[in-house]
Image (tube, rainbow, N blue to C red; front, side, top):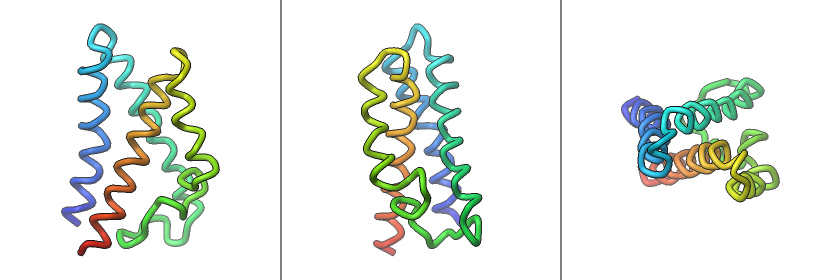
Length: 105
C-alpha cells in the first residue's frame, strides 16, 4: 500500500519538478500537459482486475508495451509535443521503477 501511495505521489512530484526546472517561464502549462499524460493509465481499465498492486504495468497494458512506448521519446523532438513526450517518458520510467522495486521485495 505504501509503495502504491509513493508511486502515485511521484507521478505528480516528478513532472512538477521537471516542469519547474526545464520550463520555468511556462511551468504551469508544462506541468498541466505532463499531468494530463497520466491518461495513459486508462488502458488499465482493460485489465481484470483493473488494479493489481503486484502487476507490472510495463509490457502488460497496451499503452505500456514496447512498440507504442518506443514512440514516446520521439515526441520530445518537436516543440509542440515536447511536454507530452516528457510526461509519457517520465510516466513509463516511474512505472518501470515500480516494477523493479516490486521484484526486489
